Image 1: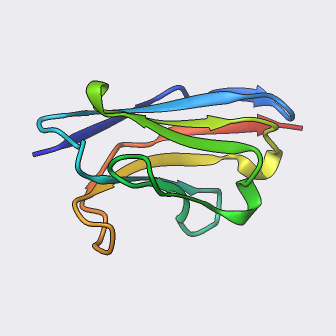
Image 2: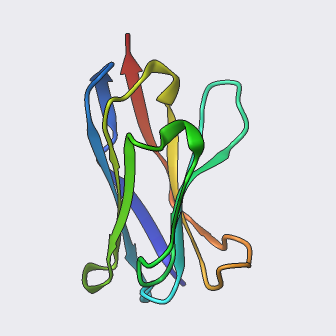
Length: 119
C-alpha cells in the first residue's frame, strides 16, 4: 500500500516562495503519474499540477503557469511542487496524489499540507 506524506507547507507573504515535497513509502511510485491538488476555503478540490512517470509530460493549471513547477526524483520516490510569486488566492490545503495510469483515477492521497499566503 503506497503512502504519501507531504511537507514544506507554511505561512508566507505574497510574492514569496515555498517548495512542497511528497515522499512515497510502502512501494515505489516511479511508474506512477503524480499530481498536486489543492482545496481552498469554501472551494472544491482542484488539480494544480501533474507529472508523468518519467517527467516527460507535465500539466499546470493556467492560474499557476509561470509561477509553479512540478518535478520528481524517482530515485528518492519524491515529487516536488516549487511555488514562486505566491498570491493570497493560492492559500489552500495542498494534497499529493498518485495513480498507476495516465488516464486512470488518482488512487493514493496524502494527508495534506497547509499553505497560507498573507497579503
